[in-house]
Length: 129
Image (cartoon, rainbow, N blue to C red; front, side, top):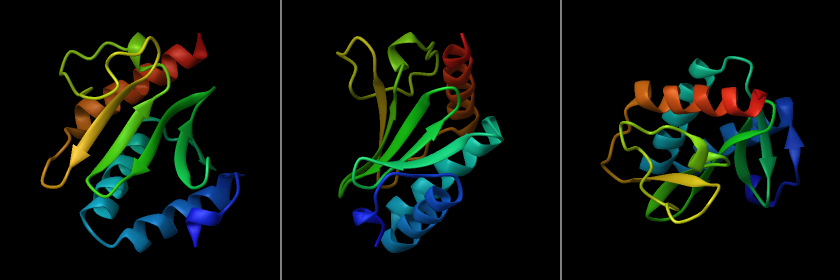
């Protein structure tokens, strides 16, 4: 089961993320799948990792964001979110910190893939500096 897997990268991590999506088998799995697809569309060579007791992580010259799943939400935490422009106001959690910012997605909510991709691209650009 993916929750107990240790840190993995590349194909192992991608497989574990696939398994997590399947095991959720509800709106959270579908949301995580859509977010993952948007991240891959934004950064085709993004690295998928599996860290911290089962958290999907997307990296490109450093961590872009994590994709945590909870009973009530899917949480995308951007490692350097406080440095990102967010003209569409996607960030709605972890707003008080100096570094990270997060997007909490609840059941029935949709996230604009175009705006999410723009944030992911900007995060990759900041990581490259």
